[in-house]
Amino acid sequence: MLLSVALGITGARTTTFPGDRWTAAPVLALGDPFAPIAAAFNDHMTALAVALAAVAIALAIRRHRSDLLFVIAFAALARRLLQIGRSIVDRPRPAGDFVARATGSPPAFPSGHALTAVLVFGTWFLLAPELLPGRWVAPVRVACVAAIALTALSRMWAGVHWPSDTYAAVVWGAAALALAVALRPAFGRRA
Image (cartoon, rainbow, N blue to C red; front, side, top):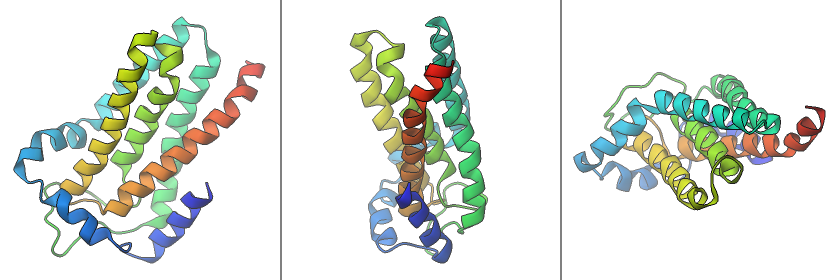
């Protein structure tokens, strides 16, 4: 959580972090072959997030697990609250020699798409053993990690985020999920 705060303060004071340009270069060089993957994560993240959340909610209700519903609801609430933090940081999007393949409106720090991916796929990663049969847990977890990474790459590839925007999203989202996991036992006892 302290790292999240430190990243937010630093993001508010600078338009780039050291290493942003050279870290972004290989991603930008992926070129047009990466376009279909980027489009899937850039254009359809909201619909995917809603669908996956609905499935998780249905499975938690089916299992009569209010503690799982708490984690899912906490992740959704965290997304909204972290958007407030994003507005406070108010860091601009890349410009200049960055090729913007997509449009985005400020603020850029942290990446909203990457933050959503961390919260949605991170929730699935954490709850998979309790929502799914055992044989599905490992493949779902691998898919969750891949989806988070591909979302972060797609936002950089599109030219609308610096690498530090996506790294911060991972840290902010992980901190929110860690808090949800820490609070979950207390909620489960009350439910």
